[in-house]
Amino acid sequence: MSDDRPMVAIITSVTDGYDTLKRIMPQFGLTTEWVAVTDGKETAEPDHGWQLCDVDAWAENADRSHPNRLAKIAKCEPWRFTDAPYSIWIDSSYRVTSPLFAFEAVKFANPIAQFVHPWRNCIFDEATASKELTRYDDQRQFINDQVREYRSIGHPENWGLWATGVIVRKHKPDVGEHGSQWLAEIRRHSYQDQISEPVILRLCDLRPNPLPGDHITNPWLRYEGSARHA
Image (cartoon, rainbow, N blue to C red; front, side):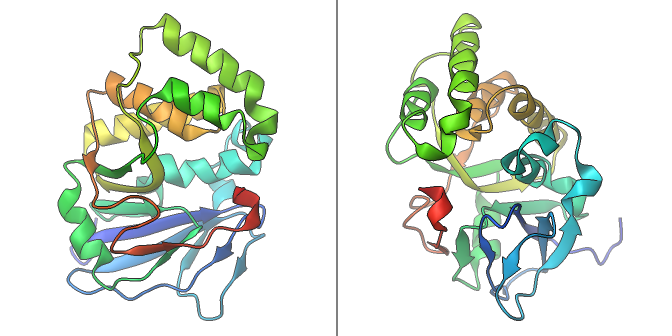
């Protein structure tokens, strides 16, 4: 690692043209790089400012089964794409609106920070709600099998639930273990990653520090998701 490496990488992923890559917001207070991991099918705003990386170079066969799984590689294991000691994952549905986003957000990474889910606190409730969403039509059987397994291994109800559209991390060994186990779980079960994340957090003895606000209303980001999120 170079001494002049950035302090934090802001990382997103766009596959199958799911969202438009939004123009970056230059950051104050610490050195920042912006990395977008894509399959080459993205649309982007003019002068967007992201460094583009090819997701296919990192993909396994399970990832290629669906573009949503491809996007999870950078989400779960952002350190593959940066030497920075901190990263902030943001879904491509977000536009950064604050020049202090990175500076302020990394203060919460102890070693992981996320928005608490505003409506639910339980993966089993999340699974029920997810099966009602059109975008998970092809995942219902995966979700059913997943829930059955998580009950069988004793994951508690109401243990906690976090929105996974923004994840702030300090790159430590236990955080890396969480990321690799989470990605394996997404490959094995559904790509609705908010169901699997708390299970892996608990197994890794981690619990995210809460970020201020929630994933819709917060000091740093504006949600601008495409119609495909519906």
